[in-house]
Amino acid sequence: MEYIYLRQITKEQKPDMGTESIEASFLSIFALITFFIFLLTAKFSHKIKNGALLDTNYSKPQAFHYSPVTRSGGVACIISLSIFFGIYYLLYSKILFDYIFLSYSMFLVGFLDDLRFNIKPFKRLLLMIFFLSCIIIFLPIKITNIDIPFLTSLTNNEMFSVLFVLLCFLFIVNGANLIDGFNGLLVINLIIINLVLVYINLNSANTEFSLILISQTIILLSILLFNFPSAKIFLGDSGAYLLGSLIALNTIITNNINPNISSFFFCILLFYLFFEVFFSFFRKLLLKKSPIHPDKEHLHMLTFYNISQKYGSIKGNFLNSVFINIIYLFLILPSLFFYDDPTFSRYWFFSLLIIYFLIYLKIYRLTKKKFNI
Image 1: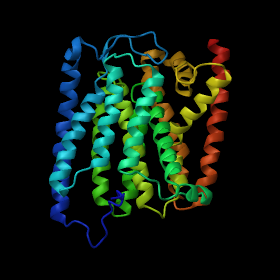
Image 2 (image 1 turned 180 degrees about the vertical axis):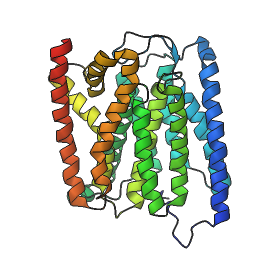
Image 3 (image 1 turned 45 degrees about the horizontal axis):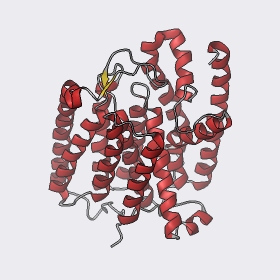
């Protein structure tokens, strides 16, 4: 039986005040539980496999810490999500199969690397493709609201639809992992995205689905408390893969259940995660570098070099995250007022890609001149 992504509650089905009060109470309790899960994880996770989760590699391109920090953010996330899945079942007597399968499979792929099983990037990518393909095919997951007519007809083909959704997930998941190198950079970005999705779904009376989004936002805020401005815990690959996959699924569902909103608006919302991967892939190919290995020339690293020159590397770390996310918020803000306008959303999306390229080119030349990278 085909899995339908229509979680919205119509005005006639909208919960009464008593039900809303119960939901609010559950969310309050969940927020408290989540905080303590992160607190205990940060305190005791160094004991897992004799400290295998401790990040002590200070020489890698994306390392900006100078003392051991545990990469157990993904562990705290998956525990918190498991508790929420139980709460959701108590409230609605429904099992979130899509979120459960996606969460545990993506967590597992990243957690193996966090435990230093030394899985090569290409093999890790293949493992991710296998899990995502199975989930997309057997649930199934589809994108039903697309503003490009020829693409809409192509997605009617089962094989193309699977491939298209798979690519969407891969871009966002790997984009999340790519920018997860500074305190708060990824987490703040995902909080902004989730809050926009919450706003959209509450406006459309999708109360039940909004609860899922709010619970994930609570988890993200808990991460932020332990990761920003100084890091007591890192997300690790398990956390980045997990949260990236969740934000992709959140966006797909929101797109499907809000057909009045341009699908290009959701492209705008995810453009930083998506285009960072896309642009970096072809940039590395042109420079004859491996496209699947990190380097020091990503946008967030170039901005860090310039900010840290003035404020030092410790302050520069978290200030860089604030700077990039303020620019990101400023760039997506106009689209929030025209998200139901396909023409504006389409042109604004492609304008953002050009803006990104021009910003990157300017900062790259400036950084190359200053630091000779």
